[in-house]
Image (cartoon, rainbow, N blue to C red):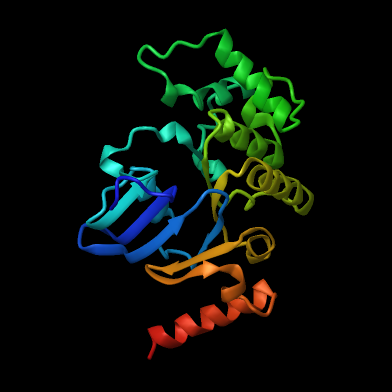
Length: 254
């Protein structure tokens, strides 16, 4: 890949194997500043594996990944990426961490050992809470919050380093309708006003259709990548995803 690239992220011919099992293969896409990509596909299709490869958490067998024009094995500025994992994988429910403590963990990747917390770090916590209009007390225990409140705190944690790329793994799966709408309104603001690029893993086709401008549909292999309008010219995300699923089933059993 070129050392100088206009794309935030480039993935070429990517294959990831777990032993002899190919989790994903032949994945090709790129991400530019301000893109909002909906990453979707059936359960077990390799969505989380792809994200882990982009974050450098799993090794890939073939292909290339470049972040801001640098091959991933030469890239070290991971504070430019914010990651919101599935809520249940984030914290040990027996760990009595406060909201402030959870947010401060988002700054650890920017610090050198011994990674001490200072006044400036606490100011960043206050700033990100104010930006997202979160008025909860900073000393409140994270695990005592509602699902919607927890997701907002995890989003704040991902944004505390002011990343240029935000990756979210099923962020609305545990939210009710009102909390889901509030959460996606925050994402829309971050994407449209701050030009933060977003990759959203979701089975919520309605949310993807409403907010994403591009679709990456995979089922171990890449099925589609491109503009939402090309994926869904009918303007009805539910219908488009249903047709795509039937298309996959037909080919898998042909």
